[in-house]
Image 1 (cartoon, rainbow, N blue to C red):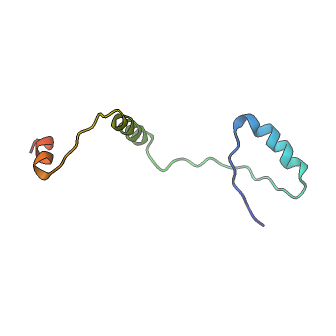
Image 2: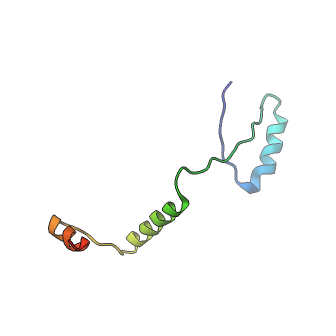
Image 3: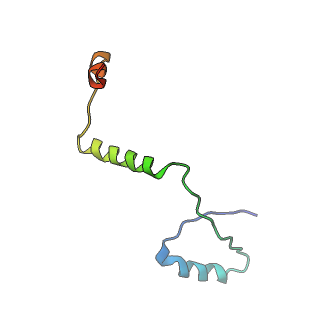
Length: 73
C-alpha cells in the first residue's frame, strides 16, 4: 500500500472529502497536526530579524576590530 500526505485549502475540504468517498479503494486516515519543534517566540524573533534585514536595519562587521567595537570589548 502506498500512502500520500496532501495539503488542501480549508475552503476545498468538503469537495475533496466527497471526491475521496466516491473512490472505493481509497482509505482515509485523519491526520494530526505536528507541533513545531521550535519555540514560537524564537521563530517570531527570527522573522522580525529577517524583516529588519530586508529594510536595511543591520550592522556589518568587516574585521575583528569592528566586532570588538560593536560588542564593547
